[in-house]
Image (cartoon, rainbow, N blue to C red; front, side, top):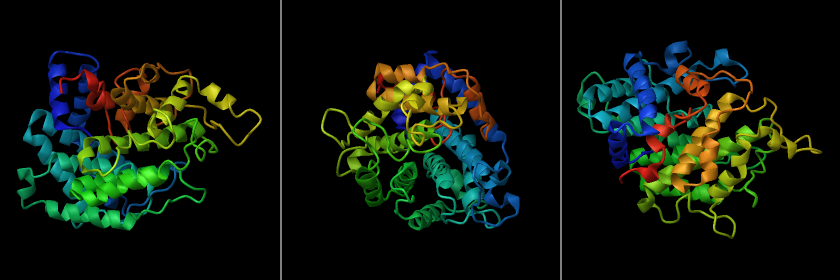
Length: 381
């Protein structure tokens, strides 16, 4: 779904040769796979609060249990699916099917297919569907102890219908819309519903860049308290969807999101965003300096903590693989600033944060991006 299987085969050849940057990233990835194999299934019912996904905001970490369970389950499903396709070992697919059944299908533990907390669902469920895509048709689905793949597909269809397409913010288009449409695109790929897929990409073209200015900044993100982090968050939603549009370009009736242009000139809309923000990954103070005289813009109320720097580095890992720009390589190789850290929800992401160099890990959808998306232009494809 988010990586072509031919790319995985080419990466495997590089890892066997001990080539950088893939080999070190592969080691980190397989460490997570081993943890996933040892993990017990989780679900939204573990907290005793019914079948609907419920979570509070980040200011109340103790009340984010469903969200944390979704992060962990999504990570495990993605990694197990990738490990199955990478190695061919059935044990990984069998474990993935077990986790999918527990989260989506089992009568005692299933999650109801309704939108409740939007953004937390948009940044977790698509990686579960990616895992499901990677084990599509595996014989583990024929075991009487698990539900049917067709029922999982119906779950995804019902959920997407419930999500709808409204721009969910009072102040206009923000990153949440981009995450919403990426979710529609990912679910549509899993469903093989190409009309839905085309519609999701088209909505991103039409409305997903409304806040983009010609200078590459995002008007409705720069007014937020953590403006640099939220701007990069929007860029990540767009580039994640752009990968889907690239991989399934033949299904589109227009340009990929990488190719889409809002303004005249050689650069696409996403490239403008990436160009505008790359210098500030290493210099967040310069970002704040742009807001001098205007206390409501370019604010970094929490500074730019190491967790956000890792998020930026994993973004530019994917960007560099597509655009091959030295400025993006510089952004992804930033060794970090002496800034405070803020905790993340899973130990695997904390390991990536604690090591600011490669390999990089996207805590939202893609995981170890240096492994799956690093320097694709150097692979034998």
